[in-house]
Length: 483
Image 1 (cartoon, rainbow, N blue to C red):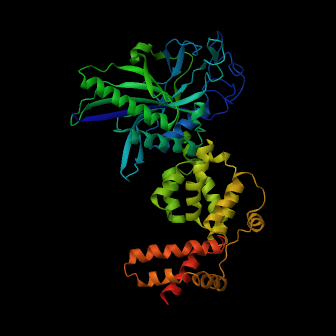
Image 2 (image 1 turned 45 degrees about the vertical axis):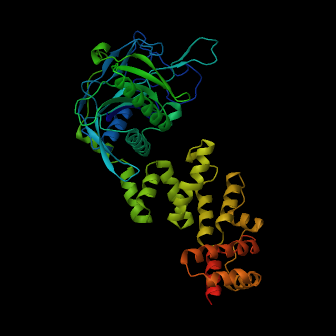
Image 3 (image 1 turned 90 degrees about the horizontal axis):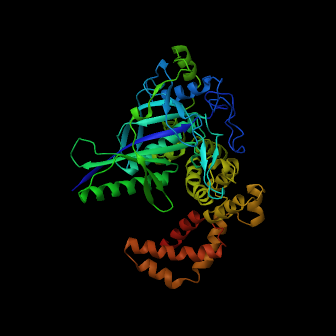
């Protein structure tokens, strides 16, 4: 039987406010456990929450970015459940009247196909604390620093049909919230967490299958693997005559295993009711206009500009524009280097490979944009060959603070582009390759002639100690051989 996969996502985005959603407590990351949890965050008797205006501004900014309805009236409810790191015994959230209504995000897959993923809504809520299971001698520690940190929870429609689509959407959303500046996007620290709802159904049917929810995925790689794992698990059960249980599951990316966490609750299981301590929040057109006035350039707009202004391909422009830090780095590199395409190639190629291998973000790059731009400039003006450029980059990556031109001079990497010198070099090398020359000239097959041509370039580059301009050497060589 052919099966169709149906995927919807729930994404928790930690907002980059300076203080928590209902108190003035700092949200700074890295403090000692339980040093940033106030009486308000813990709902101690006699305390009252006060809504953080900046959280509403960030939520509204997100709503505008996805072309969503911004609800003029939103209400906070209490979602009641009990968990060790939930100090109040309930979570203050939005259910019936969220701040952001229906919207959409457009994605592009690797094969170029574009697709629209609908957003059902996005609501504001507070984060819970964190359970710590390591280094506690078999016990669990509770850190409440994160309790009360503002989140928007983004809920999609079940519009995705593969792990590829889900990951493409997740990457697009990550680029969007970081470009807006409403989230730092550090998934390793829980700034974005993905809950994946997966079901399968016979191909060609419209009725949705029973879904499971895999919680708290904090990397694109784990999300993709978790979806593949869950799809395979569900199909195996169904094809063996079993039934899928609606439940919440946890995925272990290191072992590629999942386990049941609990049966899936419905909304009424949480006993939602309006929060008695918080009035409904009403915003007007003036508030929305003030948010719209400070909206930064969005990734889709930036992509179009990169293609128009820098002549980049759809692929390069899409990759560079979807991350605010990468886009900023690219523009600074292109400005210094003067060759946007070459700058894009180095950022998406050598630099990205090094950053990924070292598990660094582009903001942590040992090579600043201006330094890479200086390297690009010397490649573009033929001062450096490709091999010479890689040697310079290696030194820059390892912390050499010498100017690029100084490194080129010190290491003797300047490429020879003087045609007179190169002609003498070619004549000298060809003088000892009479047999190869005769073979080349006797060959009539263009493909074989091209292959034989390559046999001359090795000795030429060796004779020039790798400093001869390959393009010029090739042109001179061809003239000599054809002459």
